[in-house]
Length: 258
Image (cartoon, rainbow, N blue to C red):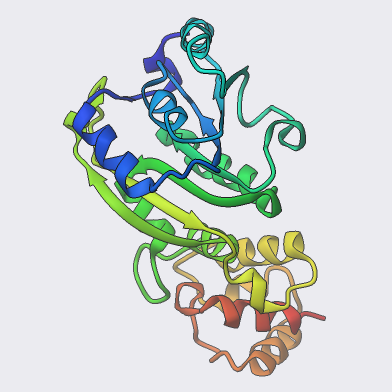
């Protein structure tokens, strides 16, 4: 399967790799999980400092290339497989730092999968499409704010560290990219949500139809009188839209569900 078919855009520019290494501030005690290690350009950079690098790659020819690289580094472990299919309980080191140059079309599923194991992760650094990065860091009231914003900010504290031009990659993508840091923990540490899975499903329902008010979205799942009571209990105005709510307001609304 070709890198283009897999949606891979390799970070070919050495100067941009150096800038990323600089902002990662890698330490000798670090244990890294690298997603989509590709030809091993960043794997090599991480291994020069870290105590251990677990490099995951799905494309067989690239796996062979990584295995050749690992022969020269005692601290590199190569795992062939799809990050969305692997058993992360077995693969993910404790207190891991995660790095990945992610295919644009599966950025959200990969982040969601990592957040399922947030207790084992110290921080995540991903190179992703700039438009998706803007959604991840968006605050309430902004056009980009949506379910992905809430998901990311529930589990982490996201920040755009670098903006990368298309020319930094081969093959060259059609869009700009960004390096985003997601440092644990996020708002979940203080929100007091007892059932995280149910909470996130509830938030998805709130954003189901962005043109509708929050109340109209919720009336699809709850009786009208219950929705009015929930909004009142959470201190949320009746005409509010989901993109206006903070994570604390979503938590209060969720906790008010019958």
